[in-house]
Image 1 (cartoon, rainbow, N blue to C red):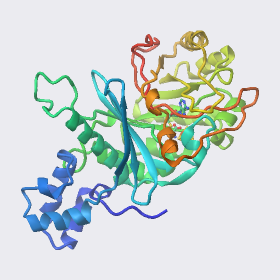
Image 2: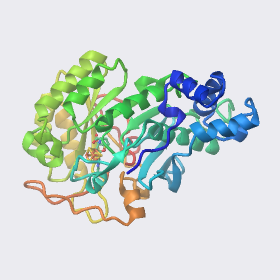
Image 3: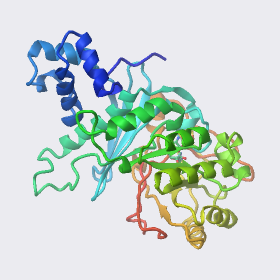
Length: 405
Ligand code: SAH
Ligand code: SF4
């Protein structure tokens, strides 16, 4: 494990100006570099024609080191889903996924290489934590997504004939590898960099950013106090402590009631509806009584449920619930007046579950995971989120969305 090289995106604009001055250049060069990186998504000196050639390469060499080396890329869904596997400067692997929809483009980013939380159904959780990503390594995933989007849509958004309504990444979900709130400082700085206007940042709306957490209660409280308007997603996966202790081991530290109390505080402070993530696993957490309990815990709160059919990885014995069971689960939760959406299975054919592509490359096997009480052993893998809307309704399979991960 070693520190990634310093990058422009690690720094606030004022810090960038100081860094440029320390390199013997005028401070406004920091703004020029920032416009290239955050406004035009380029770090190539050749593109920076407003800077003298010698200055360009000196500054780019110092402040725009290449952080992500493409290791593998896969597309599916007719090109609408593109999964990218990156090798970092120290060899660590992380994944991100770009998902195009008619009305938006969502980028699912990783916040850590690996994850230390050990959820038994998750591919990333099986390998443990390698290290936190730097702020710039997180931002660079989105910049790479923007570039990929531009490359696939060279005519640009101004072309009225362009097939793509959105030629820019409009939504970010922290649902790739890692637990974002376990890398709190770099993730919050990345959120600011992603959402500050150009040239400070990429200018994406805070409301279009979702931070998904396994339920680190103190960090949820801290996030609520940041003054950000990002959506919080809480990975609940079971409404009872017995079930959640097994599916989400960190529940042994912070129980369901504490996690939900933190979520409601977050909703009260930010006014943002909290997303409750629930990976539905056959015969593990899909019983009618769990649906009823989930509905009663969430009723009357600013929340909706995102059901994720489990995305099993090869060798996994856990599997997604049968359609009829899933429908009944949804019906029971909705009966409590709680909106439910179901994610689609986008990206599955490309090792869609997060951690799976990395597992393919490293040859590491994922699984078998621990046995959950009263259940069949484990499946792994992951799903990135997708926000289908329509409160209280489960969209038909053709329109529900779920990605990678
Ligand atoms: N660590 C954070 C964010 C990354 S995980 C968290 O756990 O919330 C993003 C989402 O994918 C979480 O809701 C996670 O529980 C879910 N997930 C992980 N593995 C999955 C799998 N095999 N099938 C379905 N969802 C999965
Ligand atoms: Fe980590 Fe989230 Fe996977 Fe759990 S589900 S192991 S918290 S990435």
